[in-house]
Length: 477
Image (cartoon, rainbow, N blue to C red; front, side, top):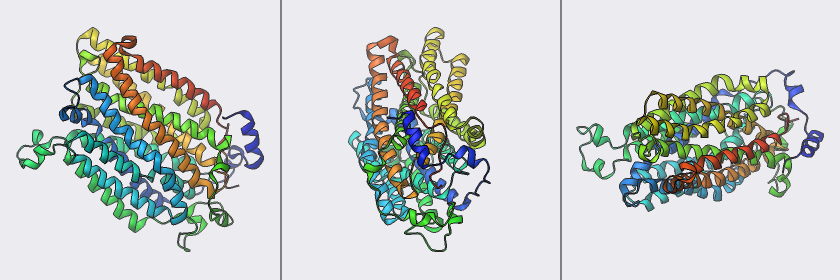
């Protein structure tokens, strides 16, 4: 895959950023365009994470587990994994389609699909209904790859770190709003019986958070249709100059309008190594995201913390807002000081103690007989380490964007990366939650086998990170 030879080959064709970019003034970001793009990005995590606080309780109420609480993890993992399976099958096609018809039409389709699917999820009363609604969202959702392509077209080497820092920030804000929305609004008849006395809310107790998420998606779609400008050079209005789009010069415009870039020509170590790192980061991250609410909801008798959906939502919301504030205030500064590769490797190393804190909390609950201050402090420390771990996302986005040999190849590379990531995210939740259930049911390694496996995979990611280029390279020069 990635070797030092690939770094030498890339350096012959693409100049280094570190020596050049420090001498150049930073290009101002096109703030209005990026704000609209981030609004579109925001509604995705709000909708997807809003189901986390209640998904395990919902599956338990469907009666498909036969009253076996330990088996809930199997079905919760299947629901989330099938979304990524569907996305992996189609996201590259959406990215390639955006190279032909433009970025905005593909975004409009994806956002509309997300709106319809979350409404269907709230109206589902069977496990099959949950699966179909999540698959629908995955099939129609090519947004993530297209948004990263647009961000790459709106930035250059001088402001890339500042711009790509916004992705984890916005995801973290969504990770705050989504769980808070789901945990607070689920089963409204139980919390506000006078306001939600209609039998509809008894038949569909989880529709309210889904309906609110759908309204936010409609608002984002409306804002996009009015304010977001097309960034594909062959489709955007003539009035948009290269300065507006943040590219270096008008000479790059003909390069952007080149025809389809053959995918086979992009499968070089310079491109593949960052994509492999992103896929592994995504796999570990989504495994943690699936494990955390499952661990928090699992009864203390099985090694969990036995939290209610509202408590789970509050903890996930706290983690999300802390993550967003930290990334927004410090990510770009830390990248400037340490460099993207060094920061990536440091952040990866934080995943090991994140995993170790799960069995530590189980042991504390078992020894003390309750969730006390020591357990709460350990959970808080885990969420602090997750904030550092999430800096892997911003750095790897930079490497992937910079790996594009031309702007014309950016859509295809983001499509390839998102296909790989969606595949990893399809496997992650099902594997992690299934290993969690098997570990608890059969007492493998004291019920901790799932954490051991993920720690071993972290070692593999640390090696992959060492194969990244020493510097982020400028594709525009």
